[in-house]
Amino acid sequence: MEQVYEFIKKCGTYYLATIDGDQARVRPFGTIDLFEDKLYIQTGKGKDVFKQIMACPKVELGCFDGEKWLRLAGTLVDDDRVEAKKHMLDNYPDLRNMYDENDPNTAVLYFKDAVATIASFTAPPEIIEL
Image (cartoon, rainbow, N blue to C red; front, side):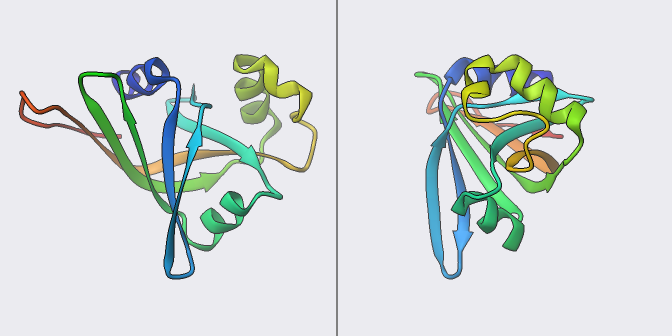
């Protein structure tokens, strides 16, 4: 878990793929948090991405550090606890301009039943089950 978290954090930006009806949607994200041994992302409940995740929680995340890439496939679960939201926002204080742990629009979601693949052109893939 820690290895996957550190890889994504190091990349800074990752891309999250969701499903919107019969259309795939991909967008950049920058929030990643490790809380209670779970990997979390953050968004707003009013955004299309949140609605897409609620309709089909199976997602895939991808990022590249310049040498290796990581793909993380799994199911996102909404965690509406204030503690989880606060942990995320404490690690991303710039988000406090838009979000608050007590704001009903703030969403944090954790990966469940996830599998990470770290790969490159020169080494065999490393598979990590979370």
